[in-house]
Image 1: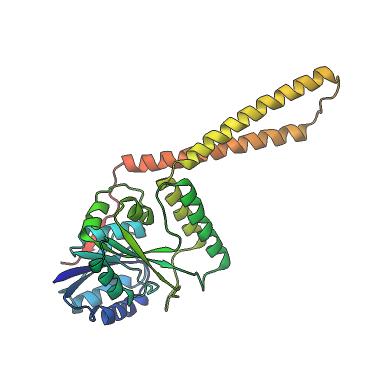
Image 2: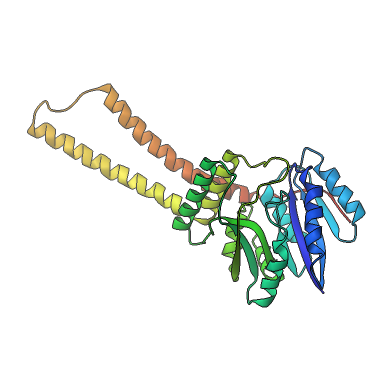
Amino acid sequence: MDKLSIIVPCFNEEEMIPVFFDEVQKNITKLTNVITEYWFINDGSSDKSLEKIKAIYLNNKDFVHFIDFSRNFGKEAALLAGLENATGDYVVVMDVDLQDPPELIERMLAILKEEDIDCVGTRRVNRDGEPAIRSFFANMFYKVINLISSTPIVNGARDFRLMSRKMVDSILQLTEYNRFSKGIFSWVGFKTKYIEYTNVERKKGATSWSFWSLLRYSIDGITDFSEAPLSIASWVGSLSFIGSILGIIFIVVRALIIPGSSVYGWASLICVFLLFGGIQLLCLGIVGKYIGKIYLQTKNRPIFIVKEKSE
């Protein structure tokens, strides 16, 4: 029999955890010749998420497991912990908010077995229910990262995907501290087929992803899989230097040809200083972002710390 591992990161999801488990179980029981294990990762929740997970674990010790972090390390750390502990022939990653339809698991598993592929991913064909500004920036992110990165990121792709053991083992070889799973899933290669579905709104609770946290996450994704921002900083600096040289030549030539034509004024001078100072700070900020990632990587700190783990 094949073994299916289900990885479920949880952060302040006390309302959704029991609902999620019941809903997934309804669909998992339809699978034949498949045994299942769950890995709930409590990512430093401040509510009763751990209590809800333990209640499920105590009633289903034979196939439910959990990991409790010492604090909140982020979803990427939770995904990594789940992948490291999953023992299944196939591994599926799901969000606990049920925006990843559990009924797709049966179809995903059938596709993976029947076709010569190692991963079945999912992507939303719309963003109904999301704020318009959030949807706009999400679409812009995918356009930008696919323009400047050699690693393709599918627009609307979810972390919800079913992977073969071969692909999971390859992902675990990437020990980088700064992790962007959508990029990592694509970077390791392997044939992937995407299933499309319409957006599903969460049934209970509220998302922990704010606009600004998503913006920071997208910036991390761009800097993790593209060196283009560094090139932009170099080009901006070069163009500023060339522009300043041309400006100086123009002013000197005009002063020689038309005496008294130079314009005097503190306002224009200060504006120029602020312009070039801003450009310099922008370039330093871009370089600093990459140096910061190098700094975190070289410290070699663990990506997460386990406080408690099921037997």
